[in-house]
Amino acid sequence: MYKKQFPQQFPDNFLWGGATAANQIEGAWNIDGKGLTTAEVVRKAEDRKKMSMNLVDEESIKEAIQDQTTTNYPKRRGIDFYHHYQEDIRLFAEMGFKVFRFSIAWARIFPNGDDADPNEKGLAFYDRVLDELEKYQIEPLITLSHYELPLALTQKQNGWLSRKTITAFEKYTRVVFERYRGRVRYWLTFNEINTGTWGFHETGVVETNLSAVEKETVRYQALHHQLVASALATKQLHEIDPKAKMGCMLARMQTYPASCRPEDVRAAQLEDQKNLFFTDVQARGEYPEFMNRYFAEHGIELQMEQQDETVLAENPVDFVSFSYYMTTVTSAQQGEEVNGNMATGGRNPYLEESDWGWQIDPVGLRITLNEMWDRYRKPLFIVENGLGALDQLEAGKVHDDYRIDYLRKHIIQMKEAIKDGVELMGYTMWGPIDLISFSTSEMSKRYGFIYVDQDDDGKGTLKRIKKDSFYWFKQVIATNGAQL
Ligand code: BGP
Image 1: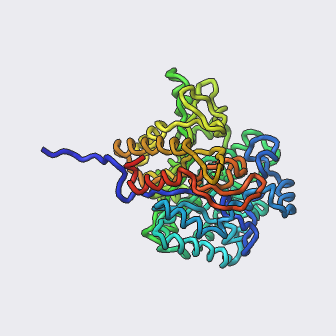
Image 2 (image 1 turned 180 degrees about the horizontal axis):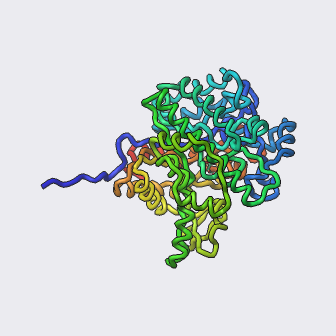
Image 3 (image 1 turned 60 degrees about the vertical axis):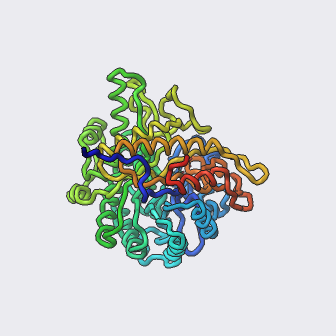
């Protein structure tokens, strides 16, 4: 009798690896012709009055441009990957990485965002990175825009609020697709595009004196431009390099209802819809009706051009990628208050949390994988997941069993999802080498398998040291996830 075979393990070509972002690792912020980026004018969290992504105004930008000392702007120094890339990639290869996710700093290629010609030195740097990856047969997975754009575009046209930024982006993507044609199989457009609803870091839009409705309108307007730009980049890639695949990238945050009360379940569903809206547009090619309704009921009017609908409809992505760190909870009372900030969602009494209040939920990853597979039926890729912790270096060692425990539990759930029939392409854990934290702009929130000797003030030798988790992940890859 015929018996259907269900996948029991990770496929042979499963892409194991790690993920980074230019402004959190590269450093070399003002050399070889690079322009300043929006990420490099954001101060350390402790310097900001409160944790907010949006305390960037025209004054602070001016101040940042004048301030040539790097200590207040840690994303300018990163971990100096610009000069350590060979050593770092060698360490990734030693772990057996199949894939390495990194982003291109647009301002290395076009220092002012829309210059007449690209900067050859910037292009050459990524050539060198690709050479190194090829040496070890590590697949590159490149994010075109990871929480940054050339600062000049914010100054000139208020970032993504302007349609002109779509044109500048098209020019940039054409240059990199042509340059790296045949060398890069997997691309992503915008990192965690949905976090643009929090503001500046994603959209590069400076908001001054706006009412709540105006603010929301401005953010969704800028995001509309990013969605169109993302579809245009997908079109270009398919034309320039037909074998390459384009993915979208969402900060996936499943919201659970606080109780089984239907009103609470509905409130959680709405949060989920607002989260998945972005992937809906990028993978299915149209604005979902629930969002059109949301805009209408909240007085949000978006300016669209006639061809936008066609561009979105004709150019859906090839695969769906997302980051996964936590889940959250909502109730009908909390309602829309919860939307927006990672750490301020409702507490789940069944979950433990990280030192930064991120609720750890491995089973939630299986739930998410199943739901996203059912919704899109496109290959999924987990391009970020990991644990930020205050690691201790003792006698040249870091015993990070808590990190191993976190990753192991998530990988077990990935395996369960694969057995459920989910098509999962790969897993790049976040920050395989310690880097500057996005939210705190500090070094001490570490994610890596590899420790980097640098403190929050930028002091240290930058020496790379293997943590216990380095050897553990090496064995996970060597056994294709069989030995966890
Ligand atoms: C994601 C970002 C990354 C990264 C990660 C961890 O939201 O895409 O850039 O930094 O989160 O966040 P953090 O560095 O704030 O701990």
